[in-house]
Amino acid sequence: MFVVSLTYKVELSEVDKHINEHITYLEKYYGQGNFIASGRKVPRTGGVILAHAESREKLNAILQEDPFYKADVASYEVTEFVPSKVGQDFELLAKLI
Image (cartoon, rainbow, N blue to C red; front, side):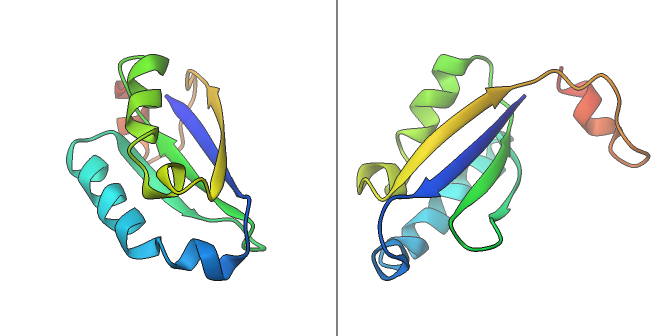
């Protein structure tokens, strides 16, 4: 499992030009089971994606499809982790290991 932290590199007005395509991209990978949760940082300096992929290389390929990546409006920091404990009602996360 991976935590992907996006940080915007440009003004929000430039980011917002790509937001609809970014949402379509997110929906694609939710549909394929790669994205588990996502959302904006507060304050709005970027976003976070909780992701599941077979490997870091596979995740990198997925991230390179992001319109934010293609437009070079965000940088990406990826942290891999193995959940060892999950809260009640989140047992699905443990099954992704």
